[in-house]
Amino acid sequence: MTRIDPEALVASLRGLQKASEATGVVHHLERIVRVVDRLFGYAGAGLMFADEGKALRYLVTTDEAGRSLEHAQAAVGRGPCVSAFFNNDAVTTRDVQTDERWPDLAELLHPSVRAVAGVPVRLGGGPVGTLNVYQAEPHDWEESDTQALLAYAHVIEEVLAAAVKAEEKSALADQLQYALDYRIVIERAIGYLMGKHDLTAAQAFTGLRKRARDSRRRVADLAAEILGEQAPPA
View 1 (spheres, rainbow, N blue to C red):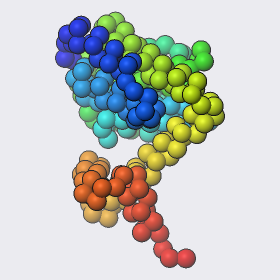
View 2: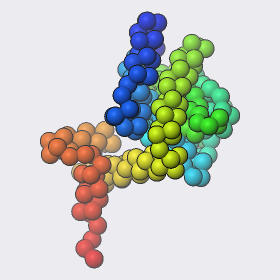
View 3: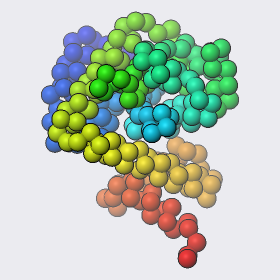
C-alpha cells in the first residue's frame, strides 16, 4: 500500500467536504470513491448500497475485477463487505481467497481480488452500504488503513445527509436506485458484447466507453441501445 502524506489526506478530505452540491449526489459519491482509490494506491475501490432485500450492490466501482466482490457475496450471502454491513463495523481480510470465514468465495472471485477491507456507510444511525477497497496481493491491514477509510465513509455520510435535507428521503432512494439500475444495464451490455465479439470484460467495457465518448453519449444510454438491438422484433 502506498504511504500517504498526512497533509495530503487532510487536504483531500477537506476538499471533498467543501465540494459543490451542484454536481449531484451520485456524481459526488463517484468522485469520493475515485479519490480513495487514487490517493491510497489500492488495486480497486467501490461503494455498495443495500437494496430492498438487504443485498449489497455496487453503485460505484473503479474496475471490473472488483465487481466480482458483489457477485460472489450475493451468490453465497456472505463475505467481508456483507459482514461490515450487518455488523456495522470495519472488516478486513489479509487474503479473501484463503480466508476460512468465507471458504466458498474463492472460486467466484476474480484472481486479482485478494486483500479486502470494508467499512460501513451509515445514514440515520444505521448502515445503508459499505465503502470497500481491495489489493491484488495478500496484505496485512493496519488500524490506520481502516481509520482512513472510515474518514472517507464519513464524508459519504455527510453527502447523503445533505441530500436528505435537500429533498425527501424517498426521492434520494429513488435517485440511488436509478443509478444502481443503470449499472445493471451497463453490465448486461458488457456481457452481451463479450459473447458476441469474444472479448474480455475489460475489453468490452473499454470499447463501450470509447464508443460512448466518441458519440458524446452516456455509457448507460448506449448500453440500453445495444441491449435493445439484440432483442428480436415484436
